Amino acid sequence: MTAIAAPPAISQIGTAARNNGTAPVSVPLAARAIGATKVYGSRSTQVVALDDVTLALPRGRFTAVMGPSGSGKSTLMHCLAGLDNLTSGQVFIGDADLSGMNDRQLTLLRRERIGFIFQAFNLVPTLTAVENITLPLDLAGRPLDQAWFDQVMSATGLRNRLGHKPEELSGGQQQRVAVSRALISQPEIIFADEPTGNLDSASGDEILSFMRRATDEFGQTIVMVTHSPVAATYADNVLFLADGRIVDDLANPTADSVLDRIRELGA
Ligand SMILES: Nc1ncnc2c1ncn2[C@@H]1O[C@H](COP(=O)(O)OP(=O)(O)OP(=O)(O)O)[C@@H](O)[C@H]1O
Ligand SMILES: [Mg+2]
Image: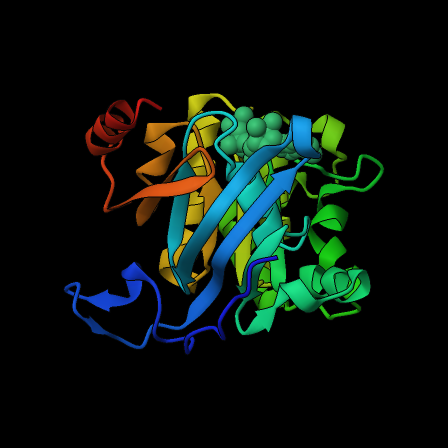
């Protein structure tokens, strides 16, 4: 295990938190990784899925993560979200160091502070749309903020589908339920792993526009893995991974600039 120095003050790391590349400015961080390394398997079958990744994710930003298949995107998300543990290094949600937490503490942290959106929606089939959406609050024993619920429902346009079970909804509607479920508890950070991977482009655009609004209008922090240059343009910046390392960080992405970068990186 590599020795890790005490982390810098929360306001002082991250290229994204710098003012014209020189003076550090005070930008609170939603999450960060310091020397994050994840090795799967033992000697002969060893895979270095994350190789010494240090990054800072400022609050109130929509960040996309891109890179070739197997470059470590899902591993990075899972380790940042406390769904998998690092081999060495540290990850933080806000000021909380996940490396020292036991399973119970990680479960609580995920329940109370993190939202998830997966490619496969992961809705509970026996619950209605509204029951799925409020599930995180029910599990945490927290009351529903009706005004916030109404806002999320207006944005997702799900109001007349709330009594339906997932199998009675289209893929786009199911993913809107999953996005609503992630937003409803206003988590400190939402991790989305290819949220539009199973959707046609119109449904995908709807979900992405909604995620964009969640950041613009409600300051929601979102980190999204995607293979789609178009999806990446909804983000404020794009991190590129290759072989478990961050190799680039592109601000204000356009489809052309993302495609250029993918070509340069051979991704
Ligand atoms: N549980 C595991 N055991 C062994 N190796 C794993 C495990 N999970 C991931 N890996 C390996 O770690 C590397 C990174 O995997 P990861 O799932 O993070 O890639 P990814 O960038 O999300 O790829 P994709 O775009 O295909 O989803 C890959 O080589 C993968 O085979
Ligand atoms: Mg993946």
